[in-house]
Length: 311
Ligand code: NDP
Ligand code: OXD
Image (tube, rainbow, N blue to C red; front, side, top):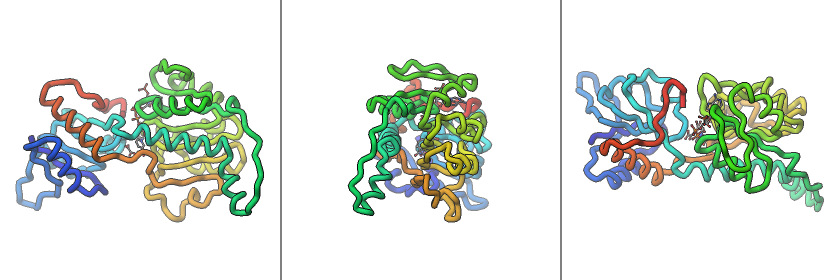
C-alpha cells in the first residue's frame, strides 16, 4: 500500500512516523513535485490538507484522498477525477474542542465577563444584574458532527437551543429547523448565532445583512466554520448600528487575517486564529488508518464526501 502525504503548512515527519506505526509495512512519503523528465512515484491513497492542483494532476492512481480536517471546501475547488473519493475527518477529537470554544464564547457574553475584565483593570468591585437564560436562545447553523455536539453542550447550560440543517433532526431538548423555508423562523427564534455549516455554494455569504438582521436584538455571532460564510462589511454595519452586540470570529476570508482588517481592532469583535478545533495528530492518524484498513476489507467507511452536495 502506497500513501502520499501532501499537507500544506504541516510538518510531515511526525505524521509519517505515526502512520508507519499505525499501518506497519506501509510505504508513505511526503510528496514533492517530480523534477521534469523524472517519472513520479504514484500512490494508492493520499493524506492531504489543501494540496495543489499539480499534486492531483500528477497522482493519477489515487483511490482516496483522506483530508486531515472536517471541511473539504479547499479540496472541492480542485479539478478532481470523478472516480476519486474524498474522505473527511469525523470528529477525531474536534467536537469537544469546538464545544469548549463555543460554550466559552456564549457564556462570556451571557455573563458579561468582558465587563469584569475592564472592571479589574480599574479595580472596580461592581456586580452585573443576572440575565435570564430564556432571553438567550442560541441558534446553531449546521447540526452535523460538530454542530450537534455543540448544541448538546449548550443545552447542558440550560440555554434554549435551536438547530438549522438541510434534513430534519430529532435531538432531545433542541428545536430543529430545516431548509431555507424555515431559516427566517430559526433566525427570529435566536439571539446568539453559532455557525457550523460547511462552506458550499449554498452557504457562502449566508451571514449577510438580510439574515443577521433577523436575529433578536442584542444578537451575537460566533463563527467557527469558514470566513466566506460572512459578509464582513454587513457584520460591521450591524455591530456599529447596534442591532448586534458582538462577535467572536475564529475563521476569516483571508487567513492569517491581514493586519489592516477592521476586525482586529473592532471593540465588539473577538478574534482568534482558526484554533477553535485543532486537528489532533494521534486521533486523526488512528481514524484514517482504521478507514484505510476498512477500505481493504471492503467495509463501509464514515465520512465519504458527497461531491455534488459539497460536504
Ligand atoms: P458535517 O458535514 O458533519 O455537518 C454539516 C451540517 O451542516 C449538517 O447538519 C448539514 O445538514 C448542514 N448543512 C449543510 N449544508 C446546508 C444547507 N445548505 N442548509 C442547511 N444546512 C446545511 O460537518 P462538521 O460538523 O464536521 O463540520 C462543519 C464545518 O466546521 C466544516 O465544514 C468546517 O468548515 C468547519 N470546521 C472548522 C474548524 C475550526 O477550527 N474553525 C474545525 C473543524 C471544522 P444535514 O445534517 O441535513 O446534512
Ligand atoms: C477543519 C478545519 O475543517 O480545521 O477541520 O477548519
